[in-house]
Amino acid sequence: MHTAFEDILRRPELDREDIKVLLSAEGAQMESLLRHGLEVKLAHLDNFVHLRGLIEYGNVCEKNCLYCGLRTGNEKVARYCLSDAEVLDCARLAHELGYGSVALQSGERSDADFIDKIEYLVREIKKIDGGSLGVTLSLGEQSEETYRRWFEAGAHRYLLRIESSDEELYYKIHPRNDKHSFRRRVECLESLKRLGYQTGTGVMVGLPFQTLNHLAGDLLFFKQMDVAMVGLGPYIPHPDTPLYRHKDIIPSAKDRMDMTLKMIAVLRMMMPEINMVAATANQTIDPQGREKAIAAGANVIMPNLTPGEYRESYFIYPDKACVKDQPDQCQTCLDIRLAAIGHKIQYNAWGDSVAFTKKH
Ligand code: SAM
Ligand code: SF4
Image (cartoon, rainbow, N blue to C red; front, side, top):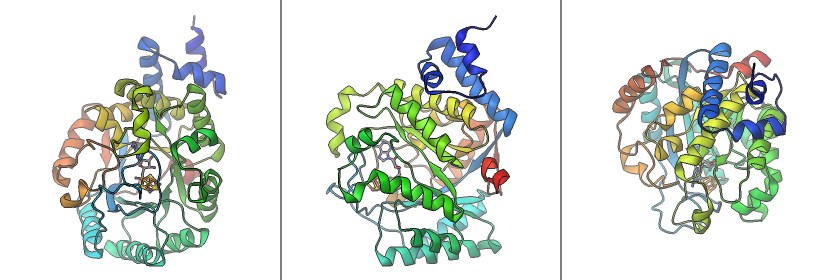
């Protein structure tokens, strides 16, 4: 006889109440939820993990998100922007290491120089070995025209986390003004999908004021938006940001980690064929965090390729994992860690979202 909890695990469609029950799981029930996330992944995908070599292009940002160390109001950050040669060296290294794809991420800028430069860099990256590298961008909110230019230059995936799908909570973690409009962020996701990008979104888990109902709503939002990729990670308080003053009301690091894993497992049940990133923030609060995320249903890892001297300036949150690792050390370490949980890295492939590929 199945318990009520096991019945929910077997349901083909989950409603908000089912999701809340699953996200409340603890102890043996949590273990069986995470095992189920892994089983669903292995049944629909495989045991391969796809890599995106992360290039943290620059930390100049026009926005003032209340949680992020790169916010324009943080005067303690030494701002940088990689040169063209540095970006292209990183991309060539990704190719040599067999990563298959790179992800270019930075603070948000919408000036013409930035837009032109990204277009140029994407075109140059696509010239490496006849276009063999896949290109993911994560460069914030832009006009549809800008997204189109970058798509035509060769980028084919874009990550723009909604951060919270609840408008009220969104404005508790962002200033309420035109530069931080919830509506615009949703419209950007719609533009990206319309243009043909494999579109990814996600949220931070364990934010101040965030409830189980918010998190259940986030999972339903991903499904309703029919996205191709999701990146979920724990919120990590940064001392030089306004949200830090609420650090005492957030769940413990272990609880934020556990909730992230439960979110991954439940989302894998709801969207079995999407790509899901095991965020670096997982490893920051738990040394085994990324492997745990893979073992709960995630299938993408983003090893950092940013040149060493800039890594500490991409200071989104404290104690970021792997800040001092060299790319080759990082790769060996990943191979070993993933083998230990029965997974393998898929080298020399773009690792596109199966959900997206089937639809298009
Ligand atoms: N500027 C782009 C944007 O906001 O979409 C991309 C870069 S931004 C640094 C990448 C992600 O970092 C954000 O989507 C956010 O979820 C995450 N992030 C920022 N501050 C964080 C924090 N304190 N804890 C955990 N994640 C954080
Ligand atoms: Fe800028 Fe992105 Fe950080 Fe917001 S989350 S301050 S947009 S880098």
